Length: 193
Image (cartoon, rainbow, N blue to C red):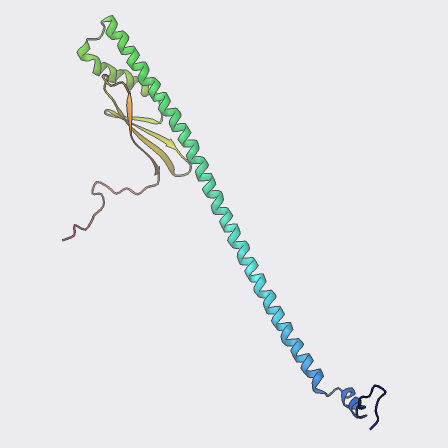
């Protein structure tokens, strides 16, 4: 064997022939490992694409839900403002009825014992022209639409003439206009026997 100039032993002359024949194991191993890594890379790209599409669909769904919640909140607060304006109008009508009754009492056209009945007829006349107000004996029910299939219902108790306040709010709630009718029986509850 010959020594190279670097001091290392020279390679056998038949090694180059084995590599040039193309049947060496190195070439096949390289090709096999390149195929597996390509398949792995394609699989990773497909997984990332699928996760990206799922994220996009989820984000769009969240956006639609957020927009619906925003619309519902805007409709509610607009209806709340209209309810307050309606309460102010009812208060003005009741004040006007009390003022008219006081004038009638001063003139003597109404006897003091008939004052409560006259007050009731005065505010019934003035509230009859208001659309969103329903008179229920000594109570008023105000219904203000608050978007699709919802309304704000406010129940007021009308106070007698000797009270300084004209009304008291009994309840105020957001109700569905498409609610189920439970009938007169209500809900059947297990008595616990």
